[in-house]
Length: 102
Length: 102
Image (cartoon, rainbow over all chains, first blue to last red; front, side, top):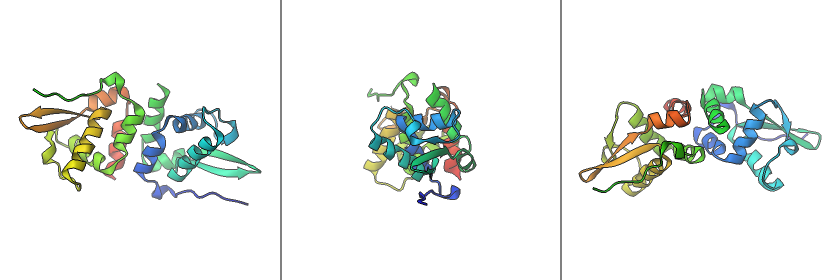
């Protein structure tokens, strides 16, 4: 089974996480995962961008450590790494999500 | 007297603020302002970059609304816009500063 690379919790970098969260499409993905979807297939997100752009955004979020992704059959499912982010950067995710919800 | 442009509090944009805070030199400036210096001349910061690079970073912080700058004679003094940031994006600045202090 194919697997995807993910940084460990103690490898999460503030610069990379802030850059990942500093884009409105990526925040929209994170908001959808935070607000009621523990795990969601990439295809289930409604995003105002092309599929390849969307794939790029998911990859940025994964390599930054904001989401984890895994294969379920042929689909890739995404999960928010809330606990890891809260451990490494307490309060940061909630502050960004609160700001994004306004 | 020369003045410098600053965005109003309700004009602060999350993307721009996250990008401004997503650089280690700029976070160092913000940390120095947060930790005990209400107002500080640009020249008083010890930064590991050239003067022109430093000037760039201060400008990015100012145009994002993270700091305000004003002339004091020939020097430019900087102040952290903590209240404005806390009003617009509650908890965000503290979360980033906490993460940056680790």
